[in-house]
Image (cartoon, rainbow, N blue to C red; front, side, top):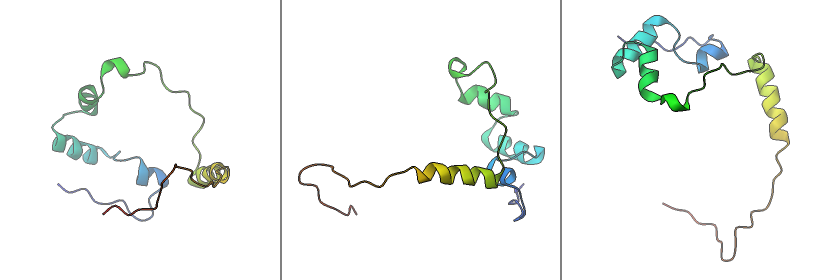
Length: 94
């Protein structure tokens, strides 16, 4: 079974969140040898680091809103001269 790529008109969620159709999820689980996502999570994530309560998150932003927020955050960056230390030279490592 092959999984088809998402169509070009897919939403941000479709392009970035991952498989949500049961056929796609089942194919991926079969490829890694698990029957359910819960079984995979139980194997991959130790119980002692799991959070018992749901995260308290703000409502989701649209793609346009998220990009605007990221641009505002990036605008706060300040370019600075690197002062790594004595004897520093630009080098190319092959």
